[in-house]
Length: 72
Image 1 (cartoon, rainbow, N blue to C red):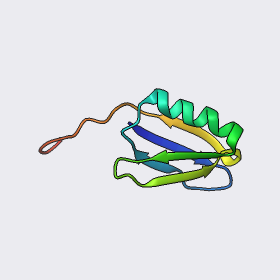
Image 2: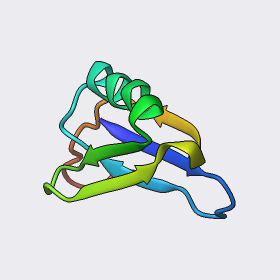
Image 3: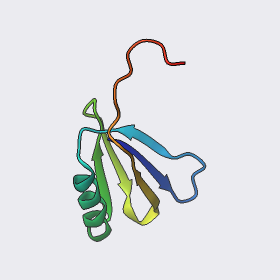
Image 4: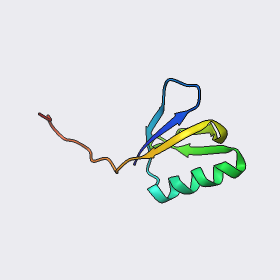
């Protein structure tokens, strides 16, 4: 699943792929509004901690398919 997070006062977005489902990501974001910190884990087990008050948007993409060979 591809995740894109916008952060207030930052020109760059946080982009990563995760093995978590869209429902799990939604739950993390919703719960982070109460706790103040959103915790995400990417495919390589790296942890991203984001201040929930500074999140401007969270885009949850489709599951990515691994491409093999050349794409025209």
